[in-house]
Image 1 (tube, rainbow over the protein chains, first blue to last red):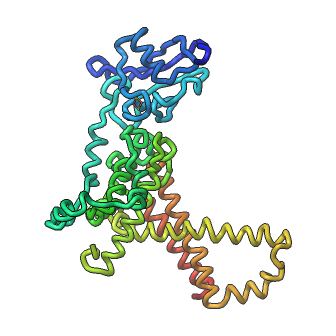
Image 2 (cartoon, rainbow over the protein chains, first blue to last red):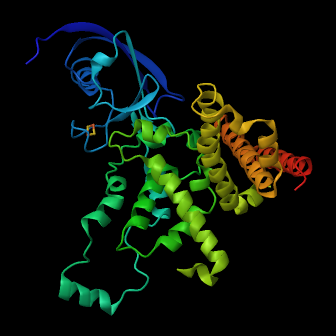
Amino acid sequence: MMAEEARTLTIEITRFDPDRDEVPKTQEYEIQVQDDWKVLDAINYIKDEVDPSLSHRWSCRMAVCGSCGMMLNGEPKLTCKTALSDYDSKLKIEPLANFPIVRDLVVDMDGFMEKFRKVKPWIVRAKERAEDMENLSEKGTFSQSPAQLASFKQFSMCINCLLCYAACPVIANEPEFIGPAAIALGHRYNLDTRDEGDGQRNAIFRGEGTVFSCSFANECSEVCPKNVDPAAAVNQAKLGAVVDWAKGLILPRGGA
Amino acid sequence: MKSLLLKLEPIIWLLFGAGLSIGTMLLTGFVLIVGLAMPMGLVDAGALDYTRAYSLGSSLLGRLVLLGLIALPLWKGAHHLRSLSIDFRGGDRDGIVGGLLYAVAVCSVIGIVAVIRL
Ligand code: FES
């Protein structure tokens, strides 16, 4: 184990109590921190030793559950994955941008989850077929080759940590935009060989507040802790939606 | 205007994509040849002297290529500026700004067609 080096760090944290405060305010904590701490360790230390009234979310401490995302000096990050040693003089911790605050560092993710529904993030079959059931008994489940799996696997690695949504400049201006995570998820199902719902999703993608609202700032992919690369998904989804649209011009009923 | 733009979005984006590929690949290649390879003597400087360049650029095919080389990156520029405007909190004025920018691009293209007499 590393020698435990302690130093003093001033951390500025957003505080908001919906019962008492009209608007969020900030509070400064000066604490002794260890060099090998993650940012989450410092927040937990404040909560446990200094100010039990502080509210924040976390669970796994290993960048898996996606619940500890916050703005660190203005950048959305997983606090359990970010070393405290990256911040030598001042650290400002705020709740994720583009979300309503529930309390202190806790945000309301209902609107974000609601947008997922729009892209039908499940396997859509054109019709429930007898043949599906036959396949099931003959070949086991739907077979999918490793290459077919690889074509969408990356886009299925999302942990819903909300960082991309907090980083997106389009959502900041246009709250109806469904955002990078939802589009990446819809695109993941469009690429899935078991799915037949791409026509429906492409029609949704051509509507208001989805793929074409994206200005390709690429911020989502910059902040994604799982290298999902949602910006790539959004831009592939644009191409898919356009190809589908062009097919609809040539063949009646979209050819699909 | 906004709903018209939304309806045209597939075309807008296709032209933008074409402009993007041309802008980033063909024009970069052009700059590499004219700006680096020719001064360094890797390409014969006579390859693009005035008469050759003129005859290349005035054939029908040459003029079509010129049109594409100029018009598509112009469209791409208009689209980039529109995105920039949205990113700078211009969501509400997007219909007007976008419409104007694309109109400028289209007018410029009409101008180019007139100049190179297609
Ligand atoms: S605590 Fe689970 S991702 Fe950070």
